[in-house]
Image (tube, rainbow, N blue to C red; front, side, top):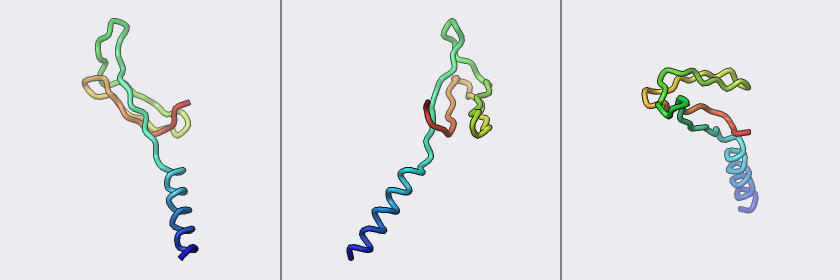
Length: 64
């Protein structure tokens, strides 16, 4: 029983440490207007997303 619990907790820890994180943001111009169709690039993974018509985007990655 202890061995099963150990493997279960190890599995949960592994999933938690390798979980995908997302960064949410909003792109605005200098005067505060939302900007649509702006490319946002994660330079570590080369993933590219485009902001929606309200200027919001979501990209996988970690802050920092």
